Image 1 (cartoon, one colour):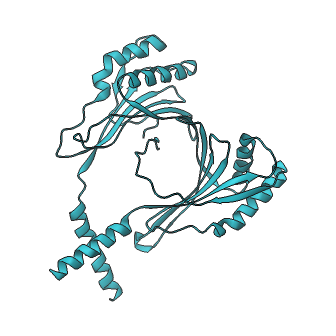
Image 2: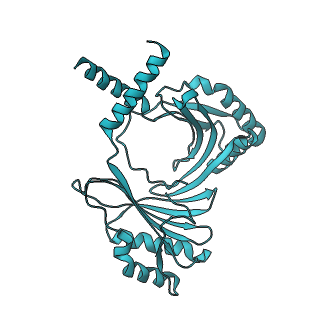
Length: 155
Length: 159
């Protein structure tokens, strides 16, 4: 086969395989940010309180880590329990606290685009969540939906 | 029919070729004299810095096990027409057990075995630097890869 024929065959294969596999899973992603900057001394206690809060609601803490470089970020990664019927890929909730005191809650999971969209976990738990946050850091914090998910570190 | 079968076969081939492979060679960095594991990690990090390697990420894992990871970016190579690209990284891993590992990682389109002997000269350079810096001899012990496990969800937040 000549090189140009090879290239044409390759292009045909790519288009055929694209059609065969498709891309049926789409990402559901919601980011919320705490309206107040959390002081350094209260970041670890707040992170522990949020770990406890989500564990009580059946989420499974998979990993907790502190990024030291390029930014100092404390993160907890939870697996959201899903059934086989839900048919989700990587259902995760991240709680991150950045070095500037920004706390973000990021829900990310992949669902089959013909099925029902996942529910917004943070919106559902918001009243109790705010109570738990207020009990730790005081004041009148609020959780604000961030459509861009920027400002801190996102998964 | 034959044409369709050929197309299907070729599609499979392309799909296989298009899959991202993570080729990895792991070595335990074994000190020949007693030395604190954190000191070892710091020493090897210093070596990497001296070698001019770009630090990409540094993380302390707290749960389910304590572990320290330092990731370096070694480079990116792309073949013409973007038919194949390769990203190379090095990860220093100080495990809960106190053993320090280095993973030489290649994220690419082609699965291949990374030959341990390929890293010999680089390891010799790091070992010489450690000898100067910490005054200790180290041996890079190749850890053969374990059979592939079931894919797990990626739980680490990325940039």
